Structures are given as C-alpha cells and as structure tokens.
Picture 1 (tube, rainbow, N blue to C red):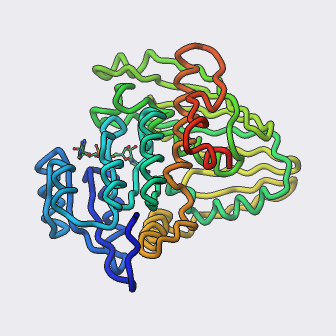
Picture 2 (picture 1 turned 60 degrees about the vertical axis):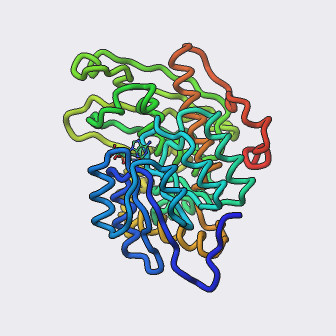
Length: 346
Ligand SMILES: NC(=O)c1ccc[n+]([C@@H]2O[C@H](COP(=O)([O-])OP(=O)(O)OC[C@H]3O[C@@H](n4cnc5c(N)ncnc54)[C@H](O)[C@@H]3O)[C@@H](O)[C@H]2O)c1
C-alpha cells in the first residue's frame, strides 16, 4: 500500500536523477511546508554529492542501495528516457509514491509493467506534464466547451538540446517522444484520445553537425482523434534562432492561439483578447502531488502515470509510422489487453 501520512506529518521525499529537471522540482519542494528531503541519488557521484550537500541529506549513486537504506513516502524519478529500469517498480513494491518525469519510458512494455505495480500497490503517481496545471489551460477548456473545433495545428520548433543522450533515438526516443510530447499531451488533454497516427520525418541538418545524431531534424505527425477531429503536430530541432511552441485551434467562429507556457489569444471577428499565464504550474503540480501523497486522495493530479502512458503511446506510434511510412492505429501496442483496460478505456 502507498503510504498515507497520518495526522499531517512530514512527507519524506527522495530523488533519483539530480540533473536539470530535478533542480526545477527541488526549487518548488523547498517552498512546500511539510516536505522533508531525505535522499539524493545520481549515477554521477559529483552531482549526487552536491545535491546531498545542498539539501542536507544522504546521497547515493545506486538507487537500489538508496531504497534499501532510506525510508521515504515519495520518490521523484528524473531520469533521461533510456535510464528507466526498476526504479519505479521497486519504489511501488516498497509502497513509495512516484513522480516520474516525461517521457515516462521508451516502450509500452515498460510503462505497462509500472502501471501494474502502481495498481497492485495502490501507489499515488504523477508524471511531469506541468502544462496541464497552467491557469490559461483551465480558461482554454472553458472557451472550447460545447464549441465545434475544425482543425488544430501543434508545434515545437526549437533548438537542439546538447545533453549527450538527446541525439540518439535509442536513448531519447527522438524529438516527438522526448520534447514535443508536451504538445501531444496537451492535445489529448483538450481533445481526448487519438485513434490513428501518420507521420513523416526528415533529416540532413543536425546529423551532419552533431556526432552520433540519428534523430530527425523535423517531423509532421497527423493525428485522427476518436471524436473525428484531425490535427497535425510539427516538430523541428535545428533552429538557431527563436522558435515557437504551442497550438493553433481553429473553431467555428473563432480561433485560439496557445503559446506554450505563456499565453492564449482569442481571435474573433473584430475582436482579439490576450490572456497571459498568471500562475506557476510547476509549483501547483508539486503541491498537488505532495498533498495527494499526504492524504492518499489523487483526484487532483492531472497527469497520473497511466495517463502519461497514453501520450507516450501516441508518440511511439508516430515513430513507428515514420519508420514504416504507414498509418498506425492506436492502441498499437496492445496494452488494452492487459490489466489496465479499465484505465485506458476511459
Ligand atoms: N517537464 C519538463 O518540462 C521537463 C524539462 C526538462 C527535462 N524533462 C525530462 O526530465 C528527464 C531528465 O531530464 P534532465 O533535463 O533533468 O536531464 P539531465 O541530463 O540534466 O539529468 C539527468 C540526470 O540523471 C542522471 N542519471 C542517469 N542515469 C541514472 C541512473 N540510472 N540513476 C540515477 N541517476 C541517473 C544523470 O547523471 C543526470 O544527472 C528527461 O526525461 C526529460 O525529458 C522534463
């Protein structure tokens, strides 16, 4: 059973992976009362030690040893996509609630294994799709309620992250899986489940500039939703000038431009309205996760692990389509046949 903290005690939190995104979460967690950081783990000893010193707790380079020696209520798993092994399943078996950064895995088999462990051990889970907690997304949902959406364009056009694991598909999954996943996830959040995916990718720029690079420079992924809605998501990673990320939603009578993590603009005949983000989605996402760990009530978590698995599935289907040149039906990986049918059918 996942721990429920009796009588509002301290929530003991450990970390696996103490790199970029872990620091982001740590910067939020230190501002949440009742959180006690109890252990830091990173295969890079220097990083692990530094995090242990910064947050005044023991450090480890081996997560199995950390789980053996430390008691905790929740563990943040902030690993590069390829590094997910048994971190999640061991945590679940020990009743430790998990926050897993996106992409939660690189295969549906791994995701399925973790979902099973979450269910079996009644674990509170969350995935790092913080954009779901933006105040403008609540507003966007209100604006779309009952409206006819004609077509949606999504995009993540940007530069090339220079961490060593990003350039290799077997390590990162490529841009759609690793980065544009935020846009795929937002489309699912707004428009429901995807039925079919068709994708094409192109390369020739970054694999010339960057050693060992085998991921696409750009891709176009067409999605057909169960509702009948059609959308296309563009990715590009070769820009050395300012890019853009977000969605253009064309509805009957108006359109909405969502600039990722910044604003929405509502465009109607003769009227424009601009609304900027006014909250800190990372703070909200962490507060809600910690509260869920405390109370055992996960109903406010907007991106549980099982849901994040569906976004992973759509992006993996896009990879498959890029590889074969053929449309791919979702669910492609047959996860419906498993124990998680109830969740995935929702
Ligand atoms: N939600 C977001 O907006 C967002 C933003 C950035 C990154 N991310 C995601 O977070 C994940 C990590 O990205 P990052 O930017 O922090 O990467 P990073 O390379 O900065 O940090 C990853 C850390 O994990 C460590 N590590 C690798 N294998 C390990 C293992 N087996 N055990 C313990 N530690 C291990 C590395 O040494 C490194 O310190 C990625 O999946 C990425 O997509 C999410």
